[in-house]
Length: 305
Ligand code: CP
Ligand code: NVA
Image (cartoon, rainbow, N blue to C red; front, top):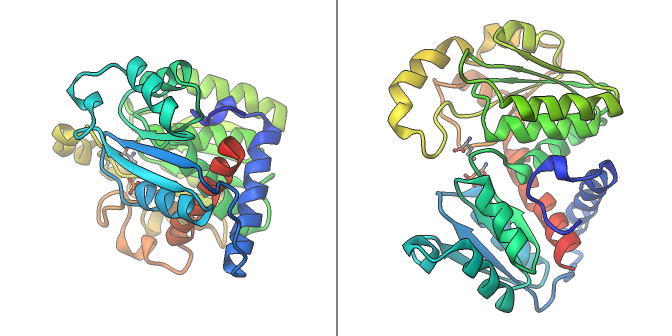
């Protein structure tokens, strides 16, 4: 494993290895055991989009691993003024031991990995959010005690978060159903790839426009904002289209008893889910958020150690 660009690049062993290491690092840090696996190493964190969780969890994670992180806003570095990804990759490879990047185009992240000589970690693009999916599956595992044989329903926009989650479920043997309105479903090539992967792990991938169908028999329900970063001008139209896909008590009643609720955050109460869902005892959104720290430490230790 050289980079983390998208979940489908990982082998099943690599995927499971990251979750296992995350579990170990989480237990250690809670027990007060220091693990300076990246002593003296530096991580550059390029951000072309806003962030709370990704920025803070990578920075704290690097600190806990004994290394140092640098916040590089794309509006401050020359990349934002037109320096090429090629030159940026070459130069940063001379200083750093790893790069985390959050940006728009997946191809920019792939190019950074291709032209640089250090590990690259995708901290979200328009198409993928692999660190999030790792944290999500870790949270589901902690709450349900297993992954294989469970069903996860994603209701809402077929976006970056949905793509990575679908790929992660296919890898982990979790049945995955996604319900999105017409014109907002997941990318077909990503769905096709996940279906092929799911055949190997023995789970099902279902794509539908019907939220009730998706949620029926689910052990976990997931949603994300209807308006991702970069789509702000479509906000009014999207709210209209997505309202029938709101996760509320009525929709939740179709899930299995004890079904948990997940959301990558930031969340918008009254839109993609009601307050009584996200603030309910079965909501695990803050465990998910915490797990970003632990899985990303596992990713960094694996790639940069
Ligand atoms: N879930 C997530 O990636 O959050 P941030 O945008 O705050 O990093
Ligand atoms: N789909 C959202 C996720 C934010 C963490 C976005 O891309 O804005």
